[in-house]
Length: 567
Image (cartoon, rainbow, N blue to C red; front, side):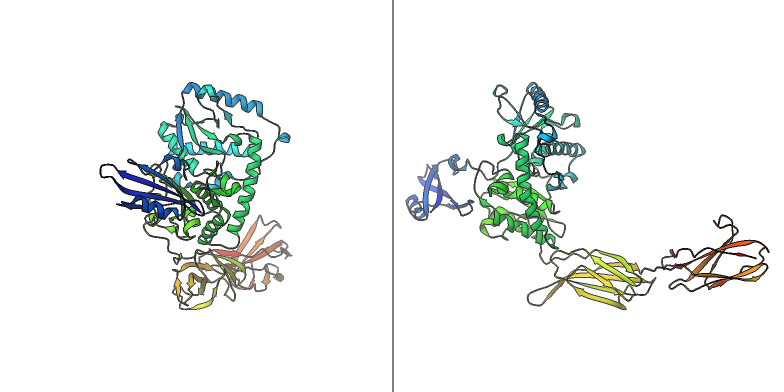
C-alpha cells in the first residue's frame, strides 16, 4: 500500500472545501502532487483515496502545507548564520591550535588518492563573476581542496558557550577583496551547490564581517575518517566515469549514459546525508539534491560542463550538450516518470510536469547560471566536423576529424580544386579518420568532411561541411656527388637526380668547415662546373636538394657527403 497525504484548504465563511492537495509517495519516493478546486464532499474523496493506500489527512484554513510531512525536504537551501567577530577570532585561534595538535607524520596518515579536485565543477560562473568574486571562489576552492586532500586536517568544533555546536572549516577571508557579507555568502552558497565533490559539507555557513566558515557533517570532521570515505567514494565514482567514457561516445551519449546509470544505481529516499554526494554514492538512496549533485560530478568529470539549478524545494541540472548550449536534465524525475521525459529540455518545457513551481528557477543565482534555451535540444542537430591533416609518408596523408554528436556516419572527400569538381579520393565511414593514398607529392589539396545520420526509414540528415586545405608531404634524400677535374683551374661537380627535388644548391669552400665559401650556386641542373679557380689549391664541395612548396616555403634535403679536389 502507498502512503497518501491529503491536505484540505477550507473556506470557513462558506463551509466548503475550497481545494485539496494529494501527495502520494511513489516507488522511488518522490511525492507526486495533485490539486483540485471546488470539491464539496470531503468524505467521498477520503473514501476513494483510502482504497489506494494508508491515508493521512490535514486541514487548514490558511495553507495546504503541513510541517508534519514537509519536514523532510528534497532540496534544503543553504542556511547562513552571522557570528560576532570576537567569536570568529576565537574560532580562528582554535583552528590554529587544533591543527597544530592533530598534525601527524605521513607514516601515521592514511593518504587520500591524488587527483585534480577542481575538475568536478562547471566553471561557467567564472565568466560572469566580478574579479573579486572569482578571487573569492578560488579561495573557497583552495580551502576545500585542503580538507579533502589532507587527512591530517580536522574540522574544528564550536562549543556550546559560543552559541553553536558544529564542526567547521577554517575561515575563508573575503573582507580584503571588497566584497560585502551578502556578496561573499552568495558566492559561497553557489560554490556549495556546484562543488559536490566536497561531500563532507552540510548545508550551513557561518560568517563574520571578515570570514566565511563552512559547516561539516559531524562524523566527517576527522581527517583520517574523511580520507577513508573519500577513497571509497571516488573509487566508485571512477568506475562510473569509466563506464560513461568507455568507447568513442559523443556528448549526447555521455549524458544518456550518466542519466541511466544514476537511475539504475540510486533509489529515491530520505536519509541523514541526502543533501550530500555521499548519499547516492555510498548509501545508494538520496533525494533530488543528491541526484543533481551526482549528475554534476559525473558530467563535469567526463568533460561535459554541468551546473546544479534550484527551484521550489527541488534541484536539477543544466547540461551543455553537443551544440554548445545548455539544456535542462532532471535525473530525479527521469528515474520516476521516464528516463527521457526531462532530458535536453528548454527552460519552459522543464516545467511541464510541475505543480508547485519545482522547475521555476530561483533568482538568487541568476547571474552565475547558464541562461538555458527557448527550445529543446534537437537530437538530429549535427555540427560541422573540425578537420586536421597529418603526413604519413610521401603521397600519403591521414585526415582526422572530431566526433560529432548524434552522427552515425561521415563522408570525406579530397579534391584538387576548391570547388570539389575534381575529387581524387573519397570515403564514407563510421570512423573519424581516413588515410588518403596515391596523392601527388608537394601538391595542394582540398578536403571536406560532413557528418550525417541514417534514420530507421533510410532517410538522412546531414551537417554542413568542415573544410581544410593541405599540402602533401615531400621528403628529399641527400644528393650523391662526384667530382671530376676539367683543367688546372676548373672541375665538374655532378650529382644524381633526387626524386621530388626541383633545385639544388652547390657550395664550394677553401676549408673543410665551409667557413670560407667562395661559390654558392643554385641550379635546376644535375651538374655545375666552376671556372677561374687557382691551380695547386684544394677545394671542398657539398650539395643539397630542395623543393619550393606552393605556399612559397622550401623543403631541403640534408647535405651530400663533403668531397675535396686539388687542382
